[in-house]
Every structure is written in structure tokens, then in C-alpha cells.
Image 1 (spheres, rainbow, N blue to C red):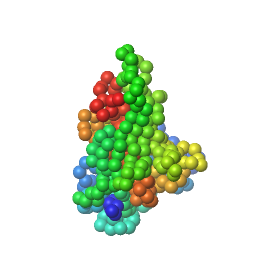
Image 2 (cartoon, helix red, strand yellow):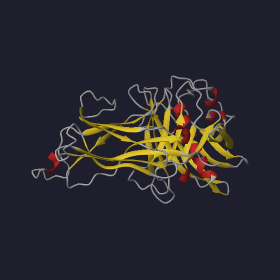
Image 3 (cartoon, rainbow, N blue to C red):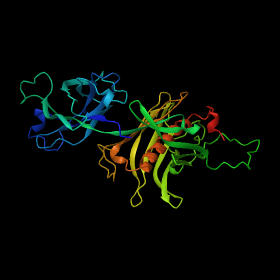
Image 4 (cartoon, one colour):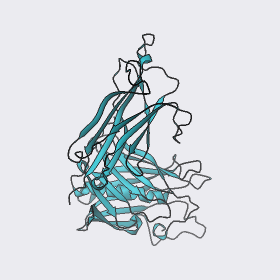
Amino acid sequence: MDPCPFVRILVGNLAIKSPASSKPSFSGKVHPSSSPCFCEIKLKGVDSSPCHVATVPLISDSETHPHSLAATFDFPKAQIPKNPLIKISVYKGRTTPSCAFGSAKLLGKISVPLDLSLAESRPSMFHNGWVPLGRNTHNSSSAQLLHLTVRAEPDPRFVFRFDGEPECSPQVFQVRGDVKQPVFTCKFSFRDRNPGQFPSANANHMAERKGWSITVHDLSGSPVAAASMVTPFVPSPGSQRVSRSNPGAWLIIRPDGDGTWKPWGRLEAWREPNNSNAVGYRFEVLPATADPVTLAGCTISSQHGGKFTIDVTSSVTPQFLYKGFVMSAKVDGERKCSKPEVEVGVKHVACAEDAAAFVALAAAMDLSMDACKLFSQKLRKELRQ
């Protein structure tokens, strides 16, 4: 089956240049400022579009603008908006995780209209250069200038959807529009279960969550990838939480021939502190001839769910075969039936085993949401040995 057409909008290369930054009294490379600048990036014309917040460096005339990515917006073909508009509001002040703009000073707003009619088939550049900020835009010699790049490009992806929760050993379908076909089956198991051993009456068998494993098979029944819990999820002393200092971990493995397996990646997960309902994660790829490289790290709400994403578009770390958007997996929050949906960039899939590895990783992330539940909460029966 062919991949699904996607379009990706990228906003980046942000910088501010002001008349003061070129005064000869300042010899440093970065114009001094007691308050940094930041911006709010929105895509108008799209329902429920995310708001991105990014810092904007202040540079001098002698410097070139930095190469960086500030925001991306991704759409399958059926959801490509008509007449969208990128709107950027630039502020001076300190941004916070809560995106509070009350104490910041608005420096100006920039709007860039987008025509995505051709973006599905070829890259499109909508803006690349300097624009004046603020009210004094007619006099560019005295106005602050904002540099930005806004472009769009085709980004086809394979889309996979679990037909059930990973712990229920579901089928996995490849989806394109309204058409879907089975491509994998999953088998959940407890790796170190031993029916001949029983815990003593005083044993606290709920003190850790361990031994979970999920194997991905192709339609012939051959295993093509697996995720195995190699570090148990245990509560930190005196709490009901898996801590960041002692996270649980999964090893994502692929067949290596002759019935053996080779490690491909490692996923760690934990519960954020201070009564947070967020699950933190970190994923690193394990090259055979180099040190591990971290490709992703963020948090997902345990209550509402979210997306696990690997995107190395703006990374400066050597990524070997990985470039741009790699994958995302949508997982649901607690008390919801989670059927992960996985998107994988076409350039990262050369065979079924490549796709299966990402499917196994998505399953491990989904199961980590359960493994990171407070230990005062009871797991569903499929996850209890």
C-alpha cells in the first residue's frame, strides 16, 4: 500500500536586529539585553492548531541569523487547510512554561499567507528574509527587524493503527484514507513468568511492574520486532511514583538472523514529580558502531494522553540515517481505551522490519503510560501477573 500524503509547514531561522545593536560602543557578538525576546507562532484558519512559543535571539549587524527550527505544523492531505496564515507575535520579556504573556511587551506582529496548493508535490518557500517590526515599519532604518523563514514541503508517511490496546495482543493495520489492511499482529506476554513459582502470603507483588514484553509478527507469523521491559518500573522510596532518577526502561530489538536479536533502541519512562500528572520519557537509538544517541525526550499527560514524537529536523547531533520527521505515536490517557496510531516518515522505512520497530516502540510507550500509573492505582487484569 502506498504511503499517505502529508504536508509539513516549517517556521524557523528567527532573529531580531535593532538599530541599537549596530552601535560601535558594543563589541560583543550578541547585543546585551536584560530581557530576552520570544514569540508566539500560530496557524490561523485551522481548528485546534497548536500554539508554539520560541525564543528569538537578538543579533548585531555583523552576524548572520541562526539556523534553527521554531515550529512545525503537519497535515494529511484530507486536512490541508484552505487559505491558512502564519501569525507571529514577538514579545520582549521572559517566557514561562505556562506561556503567560501578561508581563511581556509586544514588539510587533507578522502575518505570512500560505498557498499550499502545490506543497503536496514540491517544496514551497513563502518567506525568507527580514521584515520590520512594530508601528514604525515605513522607516526600516530605525525599525527593529525580524528574520524568519516560512516554508512547506511534502512529507509522505506510513500510518499504522492498532486494532486494540497493546496488552490485548491486537492486530495492526496500515491505513490510507478510508482503506486499511492488516500488516502485523502483536503478542503481549510476561517474559519472566514462571507458573511453578508462587509468591508468599506476605510478598508485596505489586511493588514493581516488570517482565512485560510485546512481540510484533508479520502476517506469516515471523517475529519482526519486539519491545522488552529490561528495567522494572518501581516506586521511589516513600512514594507511589516511578522517579526520573530510577526510570523503568524498554529495549526495542530487531531480528539479527539465525534466531538472534539485536538492540535497536532504548526507551525510559517515569512519572514527573510534585504531583504532576505527566509521564516523562527519553528514547535513544543504539547504533552498532557508535555511542547511543538521544532522539527524543519530553512529557505526555497521563490524564489526557498525547503524542510521542521523534523529530530531528532542528537537531545538530549526528543522526546517522535519521533526518527530519521520523515518527509519532498518539497514545490516550488513563481510563481510556488506547489504540495507538503511528506515523512513520517514508524515508525511514526500507522494509517491513523498519516499520515493525517503530510499531514496537509505540507499543512500549503506550504500555509505559500504564507502568507509570501511581502504585496506589490498580492495573487492568491483562497487566497483572
